[in-house]
Image (cartoon, rainbow, N blue to C red; front, side, top):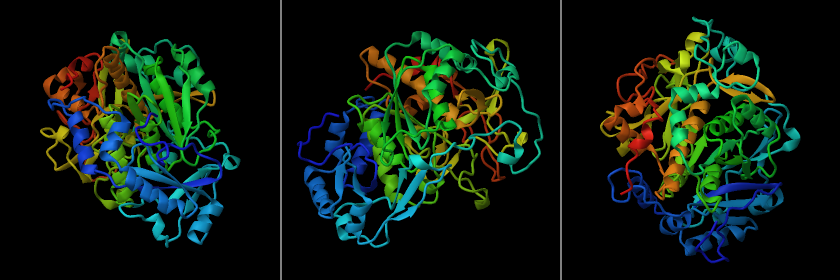
Length: 556
């Protein structure tokens, strides 16, 4: 990426090297100014709405100075470790071999070995750290790091929820109802599979028709740029090609980059990553598809590489991941703060970030707590959190009904994430619709039911998949089509989409299907129930992509 800093300054996005372990160090920054600028660029009616900066310019204004970076680099490099300030200038990577870390620390890193089902060795820092790793104004924000071990990577266990398997996800609870079937009209399914024949899965075209994506595609122009964050999963180009043959599109080439700790591509196909890619590509087959592949703990690394890893920022970032520990339990406040800053910089550079709200209803952390809990980064104010619905179609794939996704009646403890945050204050775009003082999740929703659910080809077999891992890349890809059309017309991209979504829903109700039925409560905590207007079970509802693009506000 182009940079305005001197060549000698240690600012870079280093490629991972096998045998090296990386931890993260915060850098001094103007976080409050960054968040205000990102908010202004994302708020319709503000003079700087959709006025975006390059990463280099935003980093120079809100990140660490040259002198601060040089000072931190000198402290770290004196220990014999490698230092690289991220292009955002918000944090730095501190890297070394096992031998270099042992020499620097005077003790070996702890190591939890990789396994076939989780082929990532986890390394930990000792409790005592040299002062050189805590330079003035900075400090380590991670104490654990993961490294992919290809030799341990066996065939992964099946992922997702399987129809009728009450024991696997429902704790042995007998289902109160039988699974529903696809009552719509399957379209252009160019392959034969049991799930298709038994009407246990929707085809891509059915969902797109119901949600107005056909009209969106017809009006779209330009080439969308979509970045999928892959935290620990592999994928197969053969599966992507087979999905294209099934549903009548030609998949684009996926450009993959590796994150810290993943020196080589992860070998085995994973249902999560496969669903992300195939769902996004089906909506936008002409897109420039990028995949950032990092470790399960590589959230900050993934966002950083998505934002700063190319000369041209993506239109959207899609992430189907969340962690209770990072937000509701406050386990890593420094890590969350820096990640939020990176997400704010993404918004300031014109990137829309979409994050799955989760599949555990309103109790992501534990049902034993007796209250609602959510996951991070869905609760960040600088992402669009995507929840889940159950969609019923009729002839011609018209919507018969749509309710909050909750499959507990089918024996599965699975429902769309949603509820009030315990910590994050209500962002401005929720003023007037969210009566609580804290952020509500989700912002919008889409199909997430298990059966009939999203189609995914995994290891050559088409099957049904449920969860907000389907609704998120779908919504992200549709937004990317709008953003690319804007750029093609010489206008700015979308940036954080929430200001647009909330304003459109309030002024033009036809831009969303208001989900008014259903609950995502899996543990009897009394939250959350769908209602007219915004609610914390379905957000604003489901975007109508045939009408929503016309409601995009002009840049300030």
